Length: 171
Image 1 (cartoon, rainbow, N blue to C red):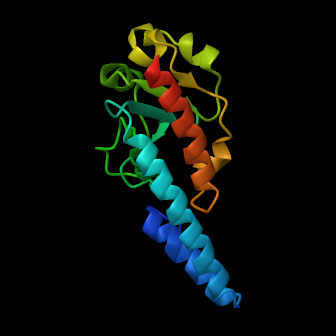
Image 2: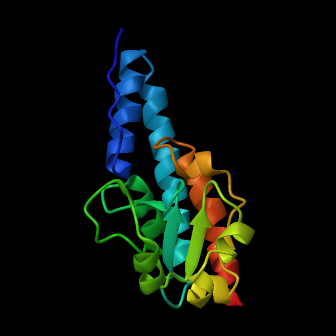
């Protein structure tokens, strides 16, 4: 059997992929159980997000130089469910390269870096005025693969990110 898998843009599309793969390998019931467990974990994440006073903005740097995500990425939905919001959620693309000036002007509360260290981000010229830099809210040690693939492991990445956000926003 051949099953074509789309690159998902939302949780609903992730569920569709899991169902499609489950059906094509005669494991539909297992795929439905997995989706059910994912939805339960998602409910827990939503409940924890409700304790935040406000939804912090996050600039997600997925690659160099300054590649980030836009509205069409499932990561944007994952951030929202986790209690934060993508600082570039208004850009109607999956990913794109943002200019230094625009990132500084958008002044994110938190920076999530997939491929560079917090130290290297703090050293970027002109970035010392960004709130995330001033308040030491740069995350560079999460396993990036958990937040970059539209599959069941995304929930683990969301739980880890949410724990960090909750901790950062308390202080």
